[in-house]
Each structure stands twice: as C-alpha cells, then as structure tokens.
Image (cartoon, rainbow, N blue to C red; front, side, top):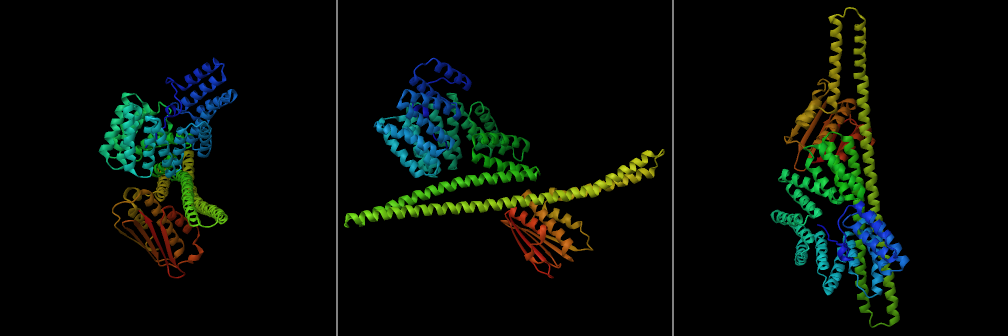
Length: 631
C-alpha cells in the first residue's frame, strides 16, 4: 500500500510543465541567469528542488537545487525560505532513510514558524511518516490525528484526504485492516469531491490491494481494474504501471499467461519514467515467473532488479533477489554460484534483522518511558499530603532510577541482540568456510582421478598412434589395441561422471541413486542392503543430492576403515522429515575423536540442510549413523 505525499500541494504550490530532466535543468539555468534579485533566485531554486523531487524523482538533483536556494535565502536574509529549505532537506533525508537528519531539519522548520504563531502541519506530516517507517505506529497515528484537526480547522480537504490515506497505511501495517479500509474510504470520498483523479486512482488501488490481503480476490481485482481505467483516462503513467503490476501479481498464480502480459506491460510503461523502486518489484515478479520455466531469462530479470536495488541501496528486494538467484543456480546444478548467492542472502537478511531489532529496541524504550511516567504520576498522587521538600527529593529519585533502569534495559537488550547476531554470523561464516573446504576437496579428488586415470590413458593412446604412424603398414592388430585403450578410457570417463552425478539419481531419485552405489560394491568384500519406505514421491532435488553425497561419504568410510562384513541402510520418509540410518558391524571408532575430515564433511552437509545427526559408535561394536532432514 502506498502512502500519499504530495509535496507540491502540501507545502508550496509549484506550477511547471512536464519536460525531460536535461531540458528542465537547462531552462532553470537560463531563468536564473536572467534574475538579479537574490530572494527571487532563492524562490526559483526552491521550486526547482521540489520539481526535481517530484515528478523527476531525482534526490541528488533536488538537493543541489535546495543548496542553492538556501545559499540565496541566507544572502537575502529571507528567513521564510530558509525554513522552507529545511523542510525540503527533511523530506529528502527521509526518502534516503536518514531519519535522524530528517527530524533535525523538520524540527527547525517547525520551531521557526512556531515563533511566528503559524502552524506547520506539513512538517509534522513528514515526522509522522518517519515514526511509521520506524515501526512506532502509536506515535505516528498520534501526530496524524493532531494535524488532521489542524487541516479540518483550515478546511483543507486535500490535506485531510492525504492524512486519512496515511493513517490507513499505518493501520494496514498494524494488520488492523477494517480500520485501514474506513480511512481509505474517507480519503476516497474527499478526493472524489475535489475531482483529484490521480489520487482517486491511487486510493481505489489501495482499497483493492487491501481486499486482496483480506483474501477477497474478486473485489480486489474489481477495484484495481477501476483504478487502472481512471489512470488511463488521465494518462498517469505511474498509476497505470502500478495497477498493471498489481493485476499481474494477482493473476500470475492461477492464470500465468494473463499475469505475464500485465507484468510485461507494466514494465514497458514504468521503465519510461524514473520510477526505479517500482521497476525493481516488476523485474523480481518477472524473474519469479520464469523460474523453473526459462532460467536464463529469469536470471536476466533478477540481475536487472539487483542493479537497481544496489543503486537505490534497498535491502528488502536484494534479499528476495539473492534467495531467488541461489535457487535458480541450484536448479541449474551450479552449486558453487548458488552458495555465493546464499551467503549474500544471509548477509542482507542479517542487516534487515538488525534494523528490525533497532525498531524493537525503540518500541521497548517507548513502552518503558510510558510506564515510568505512569509510575511517577501515581507516586505524586500518594505524596500530595507530604511536605514540598520530600516530594521534590522523591521525584528526583524516581527520575534518576527510571532513567538508569531504562538505560540498563535498553543497553542489555542491545548487547544481547548484538552478541546473538555476532554468534550467528560467526557460525554462518564457519559453515560457509566448511562447505567451501568440502568443495575444494571434491575438486582435488576429481582432478586426481582425471590426472591419474584419464591422463595416463590418453598418453598411452597418443603413444600407440605415434608408433603406428611411423610404420609403413599399419596392421589391424595395431588399430584394435588402440581402440581397446580408447574404450577403457571412455569407461573411466563414464565412471568419474557417474560418481559426480549418477544418472540413476537424476532420473529416478534417491533410492535408485543409493542402490547404484551398493551395486558397485564387491559382494565378497561386504554384504550391503538398502531398505526404503514411503519414498515413491521424490523430495527436493537439492536435498536428494546432499543425502546421496552423505551416503556416499559414509559408505567410503565403512569400506576404508570399518572392516565390516555387513552394511544396512534404512531410508524412510515421514510427514515432516526424511530419516536415513546406516549401520555396520565393523570395528567402530572413538566418537570423541570426531572421526576425521570425512565425518566433518558429513556434519557440514547435514547442518546446511538444517538436519540432525546422531552417531552411536564405540571400539569393537560397529557404528550407526542416524540422520534426520526436514522435508
């Protein structure tokens, strides 16, 4: 749901015709060069700052113009414009996420006009939005209702409607959908009286999205289609694009082709303007559509979205993009690249969690402050009959103790969260390093196989061909010997390929894959049996591959070290997990010794799958591996 913010109407009316950014910059320079008054230059630069902010959506350009406006405001000593520049600085910082700087500038604006007995609800409007974006909806709503009374006293219908819209957005985030709907309907009624079609389209679309969240798809689509018709009537590109995107997201689940057409049309319109944030969402939606259908195209859309997200420094979309790219590369069998994107996803997710933790701490401080004030009031009521000196002393004690306690609570929470986060990050880094080490070992083993086996065979073939080429008459026996060597080399390549990714695993699943390992074992060396239950339906391909590798590692350990006569494997699928148990009757090992690199690799793979491992082993009585992986 979009929050409304109409800077041109809510603060200072600016009338300029729509034009390209470069043409607009050139026209401003020409205009300024023709003005000799510093105060008029301040006014023109300020209006240029607003236009650069909206509709050009260029925060850097807007800041440059406001810098110039502030300079000429100070030279001409026009304090009103200086205060207005502080407002616009506040807005720019808010949109950049620099909330502390934004509040400082906005409060300067409020203080200046308060001295002149002028209410400035527009700055308060921004402050309320900042509280909402920080998750402090109680403070946000309190300010919105305060400025709503000011706008009603001034009979500013447009500002009232905009405030209703933002109140609805807060209630939406609080999941109080009925209250959100009431405020949206209030806003819509006022916008319709004013015939503000762009804002009518926006509010109707917000109502539609609210109905979608409430699982009323038919009504949701009805409102969004109505919003789209209005937006097309006034040729408002952003509203058209957003409505098409909303419809595409709605249809893509049950009617994928219809959803795809809406999304492609939305992208075509939105990329013409400078609406980068919405373009990120559209590219992500298109990437998700093509996942599993045409992965190369999905990657292109995700990479386009990632480029924009990095430019705008937006974390939430980067989280979705990295997770999706990791999944795609897993599907493509590129596990190394999948792991890289998984690691990036973890880093971004941790950053988002840290921001959410800061929001939580802010809320805890707010609640603590409220409780402290309530206790102070109760204390003052009980002490009314005591002398004035005692009351002052106790008041001071309560304040000191309350402030100290609040500081201790806030600091304790912060330290705990930081410690927990660092511990989590350390373990994640250790896991990534361990997985990388496992991959490096597998690469070395493959390289050794290729060098020792394939390399030697190819050298022999080359030698035979060179000897044959020196002969005047090549015999059939010469050719047959070379052909036999080529055939053996081909078998070795097939064996190495089979070890990397057996066809039985790919075509028929985990049971066939494990059975193919057992079929290669010499029956005279060890009797190996597999018992599978409820494995008719295949599980996630990534988990199949990892479980296959784990089984392969355990079997290699048994064959090399256990001196066992029998190996039994049990593979069972339950409602929420897959159980893999491997038992041998070999010599066992000292569990406290950790069992070397092979056991370490097994543990890392299981941890990657968020599973559990229980090893039961001791000298002389065999070993049992009990593994459980969530499905």
